[in-house]
Length: 512
Image (cartoon, rainbow, N blue to C red; front, side, top):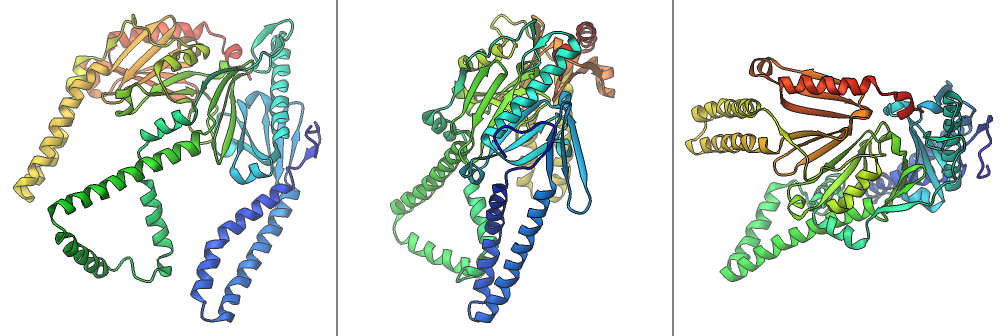
């Protein structure tokens, strides 16, 4: 198969992908084979009784994978992408170009060594309705992505009678030449290290625990024997006590320091693996994001498909001014969530990205409206009642000292609800809707009235009697709700947004 994929005829993925799958199967069989060899280490015949069936399973699996590869074809037609598969029973899946939101490329470490990529056709439906081809060459993946965009542009031009670019955006009578990519945001090694320091993680201990659970038979002792550990720790404790108070303090601090260092190193390693080579560019086709050390992803997000932006943070990094930015769209990331376009950035770096997506970042002069004070009081009262209900059986059955726990948690929760009301705000300016909430790590969402599909006012029994409501905004690919709005303002906003929706031609905004 050449780099150019023929149109209108069945094609197969790259045959070298079978080798990649075979290596993956061998990798999954290594640990069972080692465990079996260790279990039968004293009997040579026993080892062969284990290895021969394992080799047979591998041969049968590879043979079935080869037949499945021969039977799996994809056809790039004039109106859709069609994939046929199945060894015994045949299955055909077809996705029209107008339903494909985008074509994303993914390279895991092993396929990358062979120059292969996985091609994912994102329809916005998720799950089994997504089509994924494993594996094509990188050039074929790029070519297939270009073909899909060209077909979509031709379809939209035929529907509207105007020329379209590769994103489906109107360009007038002629298609303009593609402009060079402009870098919007990148993360170098120094930024990755800084990000990793805020990504403190003790996942390494969970991994070690899992390995010990799987291969405890290889150890010269039983890790689940409580008497063994009691004897070990009691002996070490006796030796530790004999060193004196100063040595005990130094030893404790050393152990704590080691734990902290491992947490930081693990966080840095996770960030480097996920964000290595992070680059966000603005191209004529939209936003292009590339990242990944072991698994490399290359995603293009057409600008007109960005439905909203989400600005969030965490409670520690927020104190140092670090945020992350996500694009909400019908298409999802390979991880199944919204596209992260700036994982770790300052507001001065994020605001230009928001503007490039066609949205307005919150201004200093924005007129914010807080949630209803009644909703704040009701939320605090409900928390107080919940913790009171928890405290009653504790008072009756538990020792007196335990009573302070639910009482303290209840007080913290009530005051947290009362104080967080200050940060629960919304605003409308220049056709954009802003909503922010969160006490320790505030989250801000920005949506355009033009891109909203529906608006709903909902009220529970308490809210109906207390005079506040929740405004649910219909957003393709995500959710956007503003809670605790006074009833009169909620219905006024619904009327304003409804007029905007009625005046919007969604076939031109979200076409194809």
